[in-house]
Length: 315
Image 1: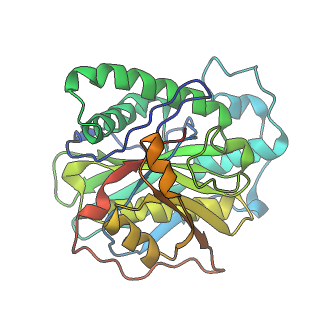
Image 2: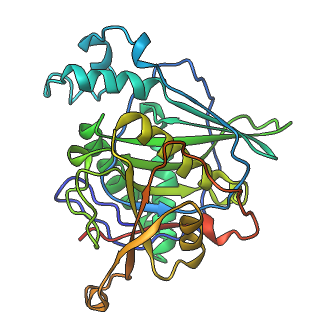
């Protein structure tokens, strides 16, 4: 998928993360969470795994009043005071802060939650390296890519809580390395969080959209990408009443396509062959209608190709 920062910034390669760094951070689920939002799509797929999980969100019945000062603190300094949030938006910030998706895998544990400001640089590094690898670019351009990707993530923060960046951290069972950054995914909830320049075929602007997902290369074939997808769906079901979720998948990405089909997504529309004249790959627009009880089929871990990320060109 393509990364495109606010209107002027556009990156348009196709991402295939062959070399992704193993990043580490200390996981503290109690620490207050700043938020990042997303606009452009990078869809990734991963091998499926067991799907027992715990999704934590505050119930509406127990929700107390939210003070603006408390939740404005989650925004970048540059955005504080530049935008007045409604009570509904403040309540959504509270829900995002509390969201944690927990999953026990065969080889360890996975946490998925909203990205914190101090985790932005490592997330930028993961995306930039994947982006450079997909374009077959020399690593000498990595610093430039990091700059554009970071500007993109900073710009997207202005859309929160209408869109958000999630990060997944993995801890290997019995391991001594601590928590490692395992992947990231962006979720748009409505038209205010939608892409300014969406990829084709164009998804409905007011419908939830999953994009910009990638998994650290060394941690593939563990079900992480699958659970990033599932965590996104769980969060969407809590943040919006819409039951239709959209995403893109390149036609050449057979393994991701098969995983999306297995997860319940269907092809709605496919790019015309003329899209090749713009030097873009043809893509499927896929949609899933969330059931009342959102459950996934038994995962299939037989292939690793489904764990690769794909940038889609938004231009």
